[in-house]
Image 1 (spheres, helix red, strand yellow):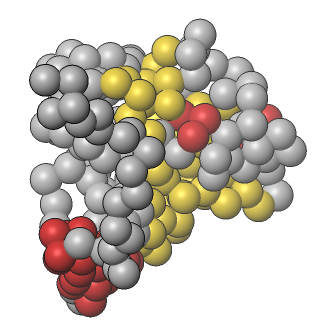
Image 2: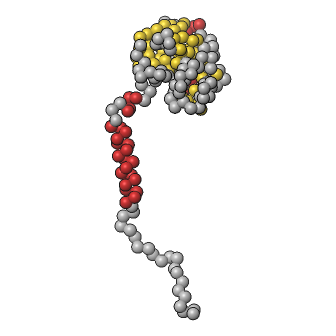
Image 3: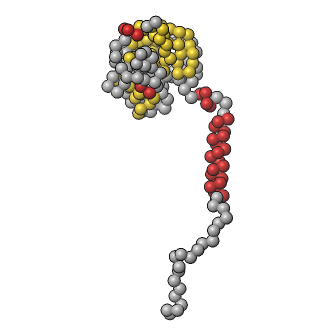
Length: 183
């Protein structure tokens, strides 16, 4: 019985495969590449992201009249679009002024259109929570979503500073419920 048992050598060499690429891996990679190429070729896909719309200019406020963390409400581009201008006291994406800390956003949640007036959070330099689904937005980083159900940033009002006066002249993003920001 001793001679009949054969030990399996762990070091036994396995035949090398000439190609390590399996058919399954090749098809998966080809499918993913094809999907990526299809997305890039969709007309308007690239420009759709954070589209900026130039709109008629409107005077909003005097820079010298702004106080840190004291929001100023206004309407833009029409009377039905509530917005908020605020001097954050810290630099912000898209901010104007000497410190780059003055920003403005549409005060409507992009998820379901809930008004966000009086939802400014001075401690966190954010907006929210939205009372519908508790979404919060970071105003120092272009109004991006911090938490909650919204999937898009708050539309940011494009500002310009001339001779101490703040003017709105466009919107980055889309106001809730519209197919275009055109007045």
